[in-house]
Figure 1 (cartoon, helix red, strand yellow):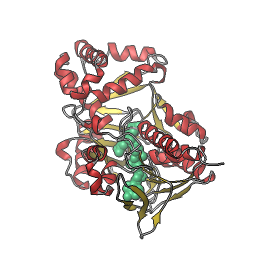
Figure 2 (figure 1 turned 90 degrees about the vertical axis):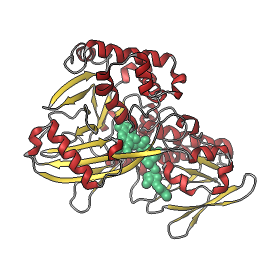
Figure 3 (figure 1 turned 45 degrees about the vertical axis):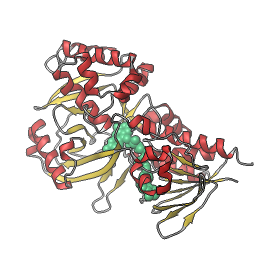
Length: 446
Ligand SMILES: Cc1cc2nc3c(=O)[nH]c(=O)nc-3n(C[C@H](O)[C@H](O)[C@H](O)COP(=O)(O)OP(=O)(O)OC[C@H]3O[C@@H](n4cnc5c(N)ncnc54)[C@H](O)[C@@H]3O)c2cc1C
């Protein structure tokens, strides 16, 4: 039986493993940390029993490949998620401005959102955003060379709509400011959304992602013969020079070399960049890969003794470095008081220590929810990841799954698929890498 070695146990690596097992390959997956799921997971803090997550995650109804993968391992999406047909923008007070997002299932809420909320953004501001999206969608490919700011400027989006609608969206979906984000990326997501209007829903997890999404997937893979190893960080990519050369193993922590007939890196881009042999830099594929930039993807999670938020929807605090927040005490991690998970995006905070991030979020929460000044903080954590930066030029550098080195493939949300930094993008990248392996090696003998 042909054996494939996968490095990285996030959704890309796990999806790749699933598809390779389906095709009859032997699979060994090596993961650096003590758990699977990478940037989309949760775990119990052994110090105090609190459940921590990698960051606030929305499971969009339009995620077809991730949904199929979960269905195949026995996870019912509808049981795993609490569907939300609305999102809320927030101003200090707290004052919520609710926008319905599903015109098929909840048309009245969409209408109320569009016609109402005029104290937040007026009718002309809303029209301006709609016009920019329609214009951008018609010329989507041209916007691979233009930022969201450029598109907004060109189409006359008002300053208010730019700051109160577009900036929170750019920050929360891509970890970037609209001045940095290439317009092609959100336009492509908008295209996916408009293609499946009935599926425009934002799912919040009922339970921790590690427990309700990753654990069943891992269990299925193990039950079907995959070898999944934790605490096995790849330190060196063993290869033989040549034209073009070839990979002969992944050397993991402790010196063991894990060998197979093909190799898939499902590692974060900033990790794979450190493992590539310098001589491969002569190939455009790897030279481009080395130039992919990343930005911090910071999650700050706070537990208070008092209930501060009255809903579990995704909330975009306008004008705050807190790009998006959710109170997860209702369904995700049922608890008394508030369990706030938020994503901080502001280039000025990129070098912050954990203490600075926590102090910043506490200050911001007091601005939006003044009552939080009186609440007792029971615990606070900062979880740090990175995300690839969809700036101008990034799209051309993103690698397709098959590298020029025979038998060496790449998966991960940064690779070339049009769902970008999302769980859906990660799953699709893993599936594309598996398809590449199958094409290269052929179906394994039964
Ligand atoms: C704060 C935050 C919020 C997000 N919100 C959303 C959201 O709302 N909706 C959405 O769809 N997506 C969201 N995402 C994006 C989504 O989580 C990612 O796109 C997706 O999980 C990436 O999966 P991946 O497998 O490509 O990478 P990863 O999940 O990063 O997996 C890579 C794996 O490789 C492992 N690894 C690293 N180094 C080594 C090594 N040397 N050897 C072996 N293994 C190694 C890592 O530990 C990790 O398990 C969010 C991400 C973050 C950080």
